[in-house]
Amino acid sequence: MKYQTRQGLRVFHLAILLNLICFPTFYAQESVEIWEGEIPGAILAEDYTQIENKNEAGVVTGISKVVTPELKIFKAENPNNASILILPGGGYSHLSVEKEGRKVATWANSLGLNAFVLHYRLPSDEIMEDKRLAPLADAQQAMRFIRKNAGKWDLNPDQIGVLGFSAGGHLAASLSTRFNEKIVQKDQVVSGRPDFSILIYPVISMEDKLTHKGSQESLLGENAKEDLIKNFSNENLVTAETPPAFLVHATDDKAVPVENSLEYYKALKANNVPVEMHIFEDGGHGFGLGKKGTNTFWPNNLEKWLDQHHLIQNKPMVFSYFTGNGEDGLHLAYSYDGYTWKALNNGKSFLKPELGNEKLMRDPCIIKGGDGKYHMVWTVGWTEKGIGYASSKDLINWSDQQYIPVMEHEENARNTWAPEVTYDEENEEYIIYWATTIKGKFRETQIDADDGYNHRMYYVSTKDFKNFSDTKILYEPGFNVIDASIKEYEDMFVMFLKDETREPAEKNIRIATANNLKGPYSKASEPITGEYWAEGPTSVKIRDEYLVFFDKYIEKEFGAVRSNDLENWEDISDKVSFPEDIRHGSILKVPAEVLKSLQE
Image 1 (cartoon, rainbow, N blue to C red):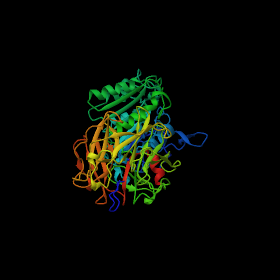
Image 2: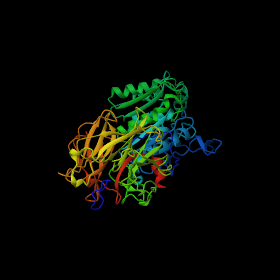
Image 3: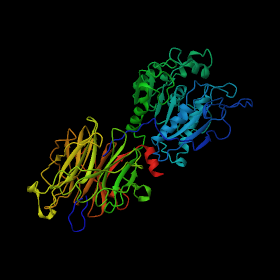
Image 4: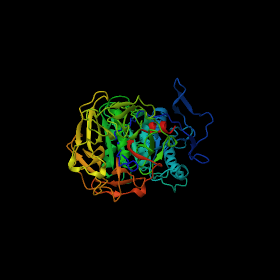
């Protein structure tokens, strides 16, 4: 809460999962030819033209007889500068450009990755001097082309990987093991080595006992000699320079035996190349982003791997806050890194308050619950005995506002301030907690300077926001406490709280921990904030950093501290920026499509 002028009056969580299979529709912004001038090793054949296969909706799902290799460019709206070259499969006879191309690029964009789908030439003696090398020549050139244009497209040239499906997986593995091989007599100053590789049910080997026969014959021809087969079997070509890999395969793959991935995994491990492999019980071949069963989880597994290798941007975050006295309602800001926050809706309110005598919306706290909805609680007034509640599916359209009379039963309750809500996954219930002063209680910490205010933290629990438990005390630290915000970090519940003691002045943020959401909570830690008055903490974990933001209400600005271990804290107030007039709220991670809707 904030002090009102000369009156001494006193006036925030996170749980989000990104469904990787549900994402907005993206289309290639640009299509470019990768070869400048004549294509090396090409043979002119006027009757050889590209064939497109379309579905009933007119969407091109597959192509064959590719004459001119092209890159379809899918730039992420807010890219983190990591990029992937996508190589669709199709047995080296066609390209599955919809399921294993555009859809995958769309998914990559939803993670903040830039995506480049390559329509590479398929082996053909009609248009190629050496059909065995043409696909690899195109893949090498595509990688160099992307890296060469990194500045133009605002890419990180050191974070460009390759993702291949089936025969495209063979091409991706070939690019990962033969990137230094001079396929064509062209300037190769720019490196063609991928920085990482993602191989989904890949054809790795051309050996008869392992390979996909159709891919083998399309690429090498019928009755290929043993030395040729060996030279195109990637399990034989791995070195310590082969890029880190992520492998996905189904045990029941009848087209491309799972042993392809297993052999590549063993070769990578033998050469000390970082590798992660996911073998699923079922799925067969060609499941793309996942159809049913356990194979549907591979995009989630891959997201975690990409995050571990710092290849995807942080999920966008939304900061709910109020301005002024809270009379105009809910304000939202967004950030990707937690350091720079920008106002949404041109700084205007998203929701006007309707509850209480004063009709305020202070201290808005929003979380995403187990039901997939966003739930918000807020302070409705300075002397009210209840709090406000509303829910939403998109943070734009809200339910009717509901008054929850959490302290109406207490005759001597003076207020209900700074409510927060946290979802307890284990018990599938919500805990709503807030600060209240009950006149006559905790006299040992009552002082005249606080104008009769002497808060403790109280709570109720609910499963449906219709039926609520009896009000109970949540935290009694032995001092005037307010502005608690609880997050689950490192398998424990961490409460960030304000020590409201005025004489001698504390006015700082501290930490208490518990094994259960309802407590009991530990003794409050030493202050984690500096020599200024701070209130309204809210926290978020971004990779290995814990960030805690708070209101420096005397200075009329927001501050922040960070830690890697929840014990040692560094003030980073000079490194963060916020919208003007922002006051006490909460942070929530959201899917990219939710932020996009808010921005629109």
